[in-house]
Amino acid sequence: MKIYTSEPMHTAEHILNQTMIRLMGCNRSRNAHIERKKSRCDYDLPAALTDEQLSLVTKTVNEVIERHLPVTIEWVDKATAAQLADLSKLPNETETAIRIVRVGDYDTCACSGPHVANTSEIGAFSIISHDYAEGRWRVRWKLEQK
Image 1: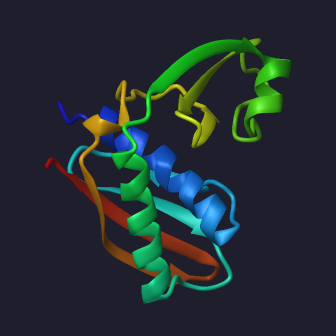
Image 2 (image 1 turned 90 degrees about the vertical axis):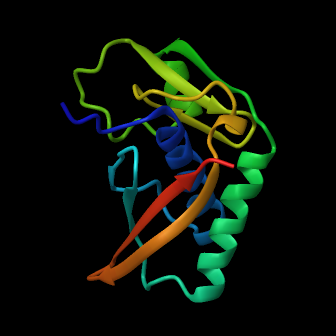
């Protein structure tokens, strides 16, 4: 049986998403595929990232990982969750209690995936490839244990 996700990769996705929001002014990824060996995210952007932007994203993600931030989970009512995170990707019939995942003071997101307890468990983030087509920038990355 193939296991598609892992705690380090999934937590790295949260950090990547927040980094893209902060640096590129976009929304969280519109589509993601998280696996143990490599993962990918799609972002709606007006152009592909430059080499300088790629370097900055990689550097920022790794700096956040190196902060050894705690990753916490809490259940809150839907109204509170809407104040903390974007709930637009959740189905309308979502239960009244929403699972909120926080990566220290860096990211807050409604999420049901598996996560590490601390960013020190993630490893080094690196972008392995990317492409751009019709407003969609796709990035593929991997993690390496130190």
